[in-house]
Amino acid sequence: MSAAPEFASVLSPEGRIAPTPAFEPYLDRLKQADDDLWRTAYRQMRLVRAFDREGTNLQRQGQLALYVPAEGQEAAQIGSGLAARPQDALFPSYREHGVGLVRGLDLVKILALLRGVTNAGWDPEEEQNFRNYVLVIASQTLHATGYAMGQTFDGKVGTGNLEEDEATIVYFGDGSTSQGDLNEALVFARSYNAPQVFFLQNNHWAISVPVEVQSTVPLYRRADGFGIPTVQVDGNDVMANWAVAGHALDSARSGQGPFFIEALTYRMGAHTTSDDPTKYRTSEEEQYWRDRDPIDRLEKYLRAEGEAETFFAQIDEETKDYAADIRARTLALPEPEPLGMFAHAYADHNLEIERQQMAFLDFETSLEEDA
Figure 1 (cartoon, rainbow, N blue to C red):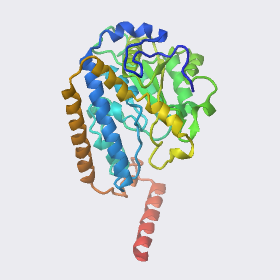
Figure 2: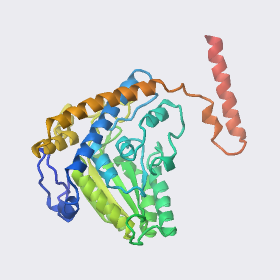
Figure 3: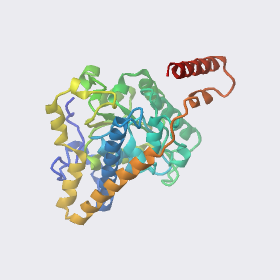
Figure 4: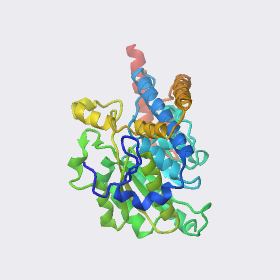
C-alpha cells in the first residue's frame, strides 16, 4: 500500500531532516528533542534487534516453541514507546518487543512466555503498566478501550496536570483492522471520548495476505468513519513516530478523546517462525524496505551530526553482550510444566477442565508405554 499524500515524515532514508507537509503540525514538538533522545532511541533499536535475532536463533535450535520477529518495526515501537509518560498504559499485541524494552521489561520474560514456562509473562503493575502480550488478534484493542474508559471515569483525564493525567495506547497490526473487535473498540472509544491512541503498525502482511487484499483505501482512513482524528506516519522514521505519538497522547490526556495513527512499516522477517515468507513475497520487495531500514536511517543522521565513532563501537559491543546474556538466561529457564495450563483456567472447580486434564494425562501415559 503506497503512502498517502498526507504521509507524515521528517527523517529521510538518507538520514536528513526533510519534513513532509503533513509533518509540519509536529515540528514544534520535534524541537523539544535533542540528540541525547536520538542516541537513546538508537541504542534501544539496536538492542531490540539483537534480541530479535537471538530469539529467532533460539527457536530454530529448539529452545522456544515459537518466536515472533519484529525486525524492521523498531522505529515505530521505540519512537512511540519513548513518547509515552510513566503513568500511561500500553497494550501490546505479541510483537511489541521494542515497546517492552522502553518500559524496562526484561525481554527474557517474553521468551519464557514463548517457551511455555509461563502463561502470562509478567505482572503489568511491575513493568510500568506494559500490559501482557495477547495472541487473539485485535482483542487487546477492546481491553485497552475498557481501561481508557476507566481512566475517564476515575477522573484521571483532562485535569491539566501533566504529571498525573493518563492516556492509553494500544498496538495492533494491519490484519487486526479486519476484525470486529477493533471496530467495536473504535465505537466505544469515540462514544465515551476515551483517552486512547490506536497505534496501527501496518507491516504490509497479515501472515501471507497483503494489505491490499484487506482494504482498497489506506487503513488510517478507517478512523474517519468513527469521527476519530487520524494520520499516516512513516513507520521507519523514529523521529516522526516520537513526535506524532507524543502529540496524540497529549491530546488524549487533555480530554480530547481518541486518536488513530497508522505507522507504515514492513515486517522484514517471517510472521512467526512457523511461517515462510518466501512463499508469498518477493526478494525485490524485501530489498526495497531493507534500503529504508529504520536503524540505518537514524545512524546516518547521528553520523552526519558528528557523533563519535566510539559511540557506535560501544553500541556494537553492548549488543553482542546483550544477545549473549539473553541466550544464557533463556537456556537456564526451566522446562515448561504441561499441567500448568489447566491450573488457572477457572477460579473454581470445573468438570470440563478436569476432563481435559485427565485426557492429557492419559495421552502422556500412552506415550510412555509406547516408548
